[in-house]
Image 1 (spheres, rainbow, N blue to C red):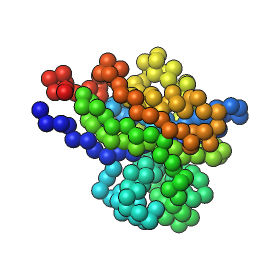
Image 2 (spheres, rainbow, N blue to C red):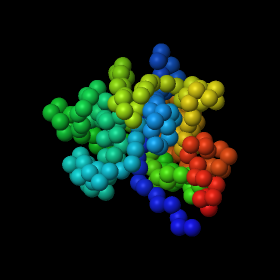
Image 3 (cartoon, rainbow, N blue to C red):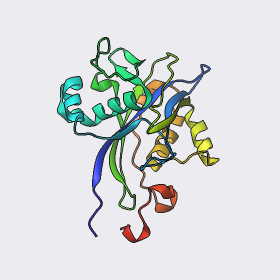
Image 4 (cartoon, helix red, strand yellow):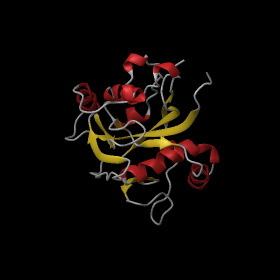
Length: 219
């Protein structure tokens, strides 16, 4: 059978110091709508597929169309959670994007790439997803889910997210789980920004059923 097509995608791990202050970080988590075609009901980081317009956003924000995946991550953060990455940090700015008045775009170095995950053949919808990290600073920002694709948004310690998933409160995609495990070992946001999370190939048994191709279509 023909190999499943792989679509470029991007994800951003937005991190801030843990509340109350102490060692560790919190990350921005989103809950996808139960009716979503892709990973319904999953807890995810902001992100999605690279759109045709992301090349132009990359040119406008970063001066380089080749930064389209990084631009996708910034766009998805704004659309899904109402938070905008700027040169001065992350701000609450629902329905706005970088380059709007008062919102200068971030620099590429503000969103370092911390991992890349290419979905294996047995995944039903295959993505080549680049994972970026972004500091949210120390402000007490309230994310606002878009109410369509995203029905929940909250800050959480990575270990708490992993434990909630283990209690079957929500599923996690394999790369989300591996990234949360890596971030759970970070004491500071700076350590999150410096992460290099290797792709760990999963077995079909380790992947939630909603992500699997039908058995007859697997390689």
